[in-house]
Structure formats: structure tokens, C-alpha cells
Length: 99
Image (cartoon, rainbow, N blue to C red; front, side):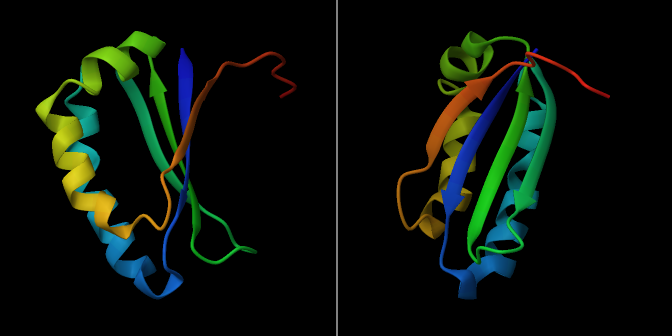
């Protein structure tokens, strides 16, 4: 499994509305083939900064299949207006699992 990490910055004054929009978009990820997990992490020492962490079977499940889906379009329609900059998206895999 790989994980998509999207660093997202928003206006801190809109945090509650942003989190509600992400919660509303979550079913689009759950319905996506190859999607295994979904979490939104909020920075505690940097207001308005979030990490979206999504587990995928493969990079293609995210970058090809999901990005071409209606679910991706719905996700962007719900949360895109909150972005103060284009999210920085990259993919990771576990190199060492210490616990």
C-alpha cells in the first residue's frame, strides 16, 4: 500500500467549514476502487495547515483511476474553494516500521 500525502493550507478562520466539507467528501474516497484509508490531520502549531493522508493500493489507483472519476470532481468542488494555494501532493511507502 502507498499513501497519498496532500499538504493543504486554508484560511484558519474557515477551518470548521473546511473540515465539514472534507467529512462530506469522505464517501467519494470510500467508494473509490483501491482506496484503503482516509484521514485528515490538523497541525496543532500551525493554524490552517492540514495533511490529507489517503491509503491506496497503488499510485495509479490514485493518480489515474480516482483523478479521472466523478468522486474526484466532487472532492475538488467541495474543498477546492478553501485552498489558499495548490496542495502539495506526494506519495510515500513505509521504509522502516519501528513499532
